[in-house]
Image (cartoon, rainbow, N blue to C red; front, side, top):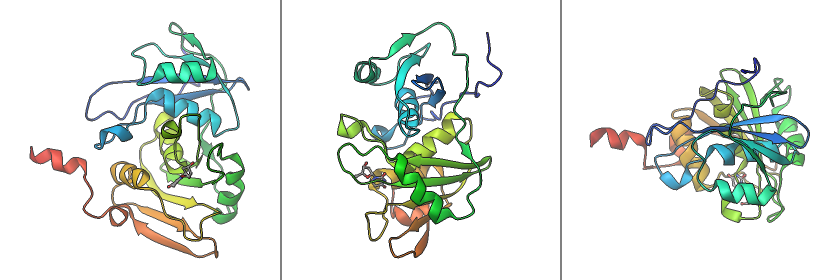
Length: 233
Ligand code: THU
């Protein structure tokens, strides 16, 4: 049984060539898709379960059920235990899928500011929001912290993984805002992921004093390690 609304899941796995996808059902009944998104810096790879769980949490929802046929993602036991997920290995889910595309914001700064309310900051109390302009429209992200500090995702990577998980991989511009930071500055991990997923594209950083700065992804990661290097081997 194939659900008509089911997104076409396709991992970004150029290195391992491993196709990995899943769905998380939230307490609300909404279904969140997740795909594997690899990075040339391998520990920054986002597993399908991590992508789907973080998308769910970033929507104020609680993960309750995991649909995944094969193979199970890295650390999937962690996610199963953390939320007591019910597992379904056989059938794909049927229901309403979370649509990551939001309507075009009239005022990007205001939209970023409003979005911060959705940030899940159980450790840091430091909200961050991101708006990714894709070929299909705008995708929102907020930072999501979970019990294990290293397994949460920054706002930028929630937006990027939501877009991939919905089948969109052409990114035009990424806006970021961190209201508690005088000068908004993405972390090293996000710079690496942006460099991989949107090379040559623009990142717009919105600062506290209402100014913004625009940067090419490669300028945010000078002398970065990129997949081009592998082409010479
Ligand atoms: N954070 C982001 O969301 N994006 C960044 O680029 C920097 C850091 C989040 C991660 C964590 O939830 C909190 O800010 C503090 O590091």
